[in-house]
Structure formats: structure tokens, C-alpha cells
Length: 358
Ligand SMILES: NC(=O)c1ccc[n+]([C@@H]2O[C@H](COP(=O)([O-])OP(=O)(O)OC[C@H]3O[C@@H](n4cnc5c(N)ncnc54)[C@H](O)[C@@H]3O)[C@@H](O)[C@H]2O)c1
Image (cartoon, rainbow, N blue to C red; front, side, top):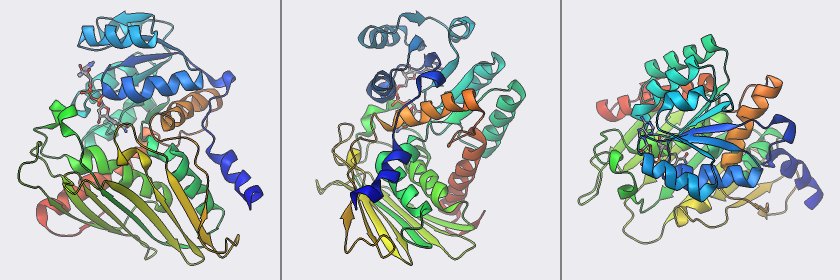
């Protein structure tokens, strides 16, 4: 049985081959860069040559702690540095399109944090800017590289659970929204900033939905003004279904984050360890019950890395590989417009109380 898992381990390994490595310049020195991007790049042996943040003191502090040799006072200076080959943008979404346009004009490759834009129209314009500049541009939807879910994707691809009939994600968390003061007054919160990971992930497995419905809620005493609970359902042309339920004000103290994929020859179930104790997390789990392998009950696959920081090696690695080989990144900006369309349809449904066709 262990031998059968070898093909999965080979498919989900997070590493960047030395011949593909490129030098990185970072725009944004916030929590996610400090806690996930930089530790991941260190682990993968990637070189960060410069950083810029509008908060110069913060950039200097992050640079000092992570050994980044150059701190710039403006984006233009970072873009003028010939050493910088890829710009890693990690600032609040509202600020990303303007930065993206400048980076594309400077013909540097881009990895942009999710959501890379907050509207489909803005996203489509950015796709055009990247195409016109001839650069590789991808979105940091690193859940597509998280070892457990990437293993699940490979198992589905190998037909181990047969034809998929449903994908469910159920998370119930106490999210520390105070960590992101800029998110406090966002009217579009949960789907735009958090469940976008799940909707993007499900698109990776099932493609684009035909019809979606989303109900959203808030609870008394919550910190942000936007929706903190969403229940999204989707129907695909093949008849496949999906559901995402995410709650961020769990006062029960029993955080959990589970997913399950059902097929006609078996099922996969897993947990996202990161969310049990964000941002420290715990190990992920994934198990498969398959009549194809066969497994004789639920068989655990041993996950050895974590969403934070390890999966961040995957998104940056895919940009680097794409520059070297011409392969399309797993989460290219063009592909990610489909996720923005999904997000926009979910908000339309939330606002109208009706299902929305994509
Ligand atoms: N799993 C994930 O992929 C994940 C997790 C957390 C956050 N994020 C995303 O990453 C981005 C940053 O989040 P964070 O948690 O680091 O937020 P943060 O508030 O900790 O940091 C944001 C940083 O951006 C800087 N900034 C703002 N505007 C800027 C500009 N125009 N130019 C340069 N710097 C600017 C701020 O000074 C701040 O240092 C957001 O888009 C967020 O949605 C993604």
C-alpha cells in the first residue's frame, strides 16, 4: 500500500529546482510575508534581494530579521533594480492593481496575493497588462499546493475515487480579524478574503460552476462589518455539486476545518491543520476510502508539510518554473479570473437572495 502512495508523494513534493530559481523582490512587509512567504523561500533556498513597503520601518524590520540585503523607499526603486526578476506583491487587495500595472510596465514577472483584484473587470485588465508585457503572472492561491489537498487532487486524477459527485468544505473558526485593521470596514469580507481559497480550490478539481447560491450572515459583537459566515452551494453542468460553509466567529472553542470529496468508487476526507490554531496550525490529515486501490476502509496518507509556510514554495516555484520552461503556472492570473467570476457571482447571489448563473 505504501508503494502505491509513492506516485502521490512525487506529485506533491514542494521544491524548486536550482536551475529554475530566480531572484525575488517583495512589495509589502506585512504579516503574511513575515510569517509565510519568507520562511517558505528560506526553506526552498530561494533568494530575496530587496523589499519595499510604504511603512519603511516595517520593511527594515522584516529585512533585518530575514536577511534581505536591500530596503527601498519606493516601488520605482525596487523596479529599477536589475537583480529583481520576480516581484512578489503582498499588500491589501485594493492596492494591488496599481502596483501590478507598474510592475508589468517594468517587465518583471509577478506573483500577486489573493485576491489579486476585487472585480472581474480589474482582473481582466491585469491579465491583459501581463500578456502585453510578455511576463509570467500568477496569483498566490497556495492552497492548490498544500500537500494534503494536492495529494487529494492526484488521487482523484488517478481515478482512485472514480467519478466525483460532490466536494464539501466545512470550517468553523475564531478568526483573529483584528490582525488586519484594513479589513475591518470591508463590506465584502469572508468570500473575498478567506473562502476565495476554497472556491479556487474546488475550481481546480471541478472546473467552473454553472449555478451558484450564497447565503451570508453576521453575528452580534463581531469585529469587522462584513459577512463572517457564508454558505455557498454550486451546481456544475455534469450534475456534480459542491458546498462551502465557513464561519469565523466560533464561540464554542472547537475550531475545525474539514473537507470531503465523494466519488462513485470511494471518498477522500481531510483536515486543514493551519486553521485549528491560526497561524501556527497543526498537522493536516487526509484519508482515502477506495474500492479502486483498494484500501479496505479509511487509509491515511502521511502529510509531512503544512499549508503555512510550505505551500508558499509551490506558488512561487510554479512562477519560476513557468519562466524557465514556458509551462503555465497552476494559478495563472488568466486562470484566476475564473475564481474572481465565482466570487462576483456569490456576492450577486448574497445581495439578491437568488441563485446566479455563471
Ligand atoms: N493565505 C494567504 O495567502 C494569505 C493570508 C493572509 C493574507 N493574505 C493576503 O496578503 C495581503 C497582505 O496581507 P497581510 O496579512 O500581510 O496584511 P498586513 O496588514 O499585515 O500587511 C500589509 C502590508 O502592506 C503594506 N502596504 C499597503 N499598501 C501598500 C502599497 N501601496 N505599497 C507597498 N506596501 C503597502 C502595509 O504597510 C503593510 O505592511 C492581502 O492581500 C491579504 O489578502 C493572504
